[in-house]
Image (cartoon, helix red, strand yellow):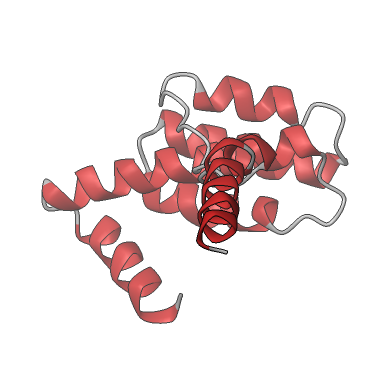
Length: 128
């Protein structure tokens, strides 16, 4: 009986080590990489080129705010794009990557003493 138990244990270990990692048992994918700040306006507008006119305008507002380095305004303008029910997978990905980039820029601006950036970050910490 001991041989059978050892055999079962060994077989279970081999299956767990060999099969599980190949079947999605690995770590879940992380967040998408941020966009380069210089690429964000173009990539965002490109992603929404076939969207409704009001959605295209929202993307233009975000792009203009990023170009002006007004990251609090870019953050606020990006919010409606994050919740679009009709957004494509590409649009959702670009919007998520834009949010990561804008959040990084807000943190950098806060570190340099930007009170508006600090207010946005503090608001997010408090209400999200």
